[in-house]
Length: 353
Ligand SMILES: Cc1cc2nc3c(=O)[nH]c(=O)nc-3n(C[C@H](O)[C@H](O)[C@H](O)COP(=O)(O)O)c2cc1C
Image (cartoon, rainbow, N blue to C red):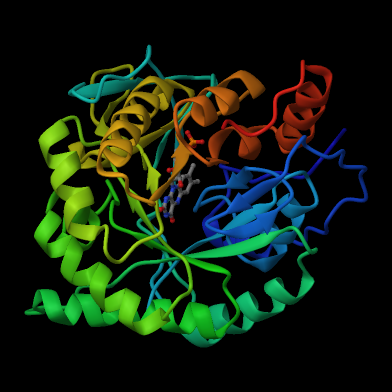
């Protein structure tokens, strides 16, 4: 099947404006039933924040077997994208999270460095688009909108929290079924990108978002937390305000070309895709154990390196209640169809008890 996909050689603007229409393909069911943060859905399969630049991309992947589509992170004001290259294939084994750098690869083998800097259209534009998108999803499908606060000079934590809350409220008012707050962006060095490492700050921001969106489900997107104590401290701090945690965003490290020079002026970038599976899985299991011990109702969304039915099932068995993909379906837009048909061919495998 020749399906359009994101073209990494072109700019974000070009890909944003690309005319893509939902393909007319038959999507088979996934053995269920399933729910996403208490909302009924047709499957636990979703697209993580990133690949879906706007409503047209959301509807495109919703027609390709993904029942929770996450609208790429938006802000309270317009922000341009970083310059090309935004996506650079890299070559590496399974990442552990402590690599000083990874090497550029001539070919895409499932893992790449991601460098967008969380661009955003103006709130007027994305709010209209979110509303339009929500009205076109099928029953059994859900729209999650990812938001982030934008730091201005001399801002306090409360200012940042208010900015997150404003975006979250706008997303909810535009029809989002769920708000996902991005607490982890490896490509920005400021506080807005690192909240997941600071439990007390994260709680202030999460509380402010919760107040703004009432009972709408709230997910926090977090990065890799190798320290179990910090992971537990994070859960402890945000638990009263959130319904779910999506993990992990990516593994941040520098990117080196063949001649030894560093891309991006030596700054770290988020490495996404197949090579992040082991650490993301390990974190999901670790967080699940903490949640179970505390008898918490916080749900987990497995993100990172999911590129096959086996990996989707591994996340579900490891304690996630949904699995969101980014890299694999960007490279192979028929990924959802492939996973669903493999699922139907495999022995009965409903939701884990
Ligand atoms: C092209 C691209 C853009 C991304 N942009 C965002 C973003 O705007 N907000 C966010 O929270 N995560 C973003 N991410 C991270 C993904 O949501 C996800 O955490 C990561 O890619 C790991 O999943 P994967 O291994 O399936 O790609 C982006 C990832 C990719 C590949």
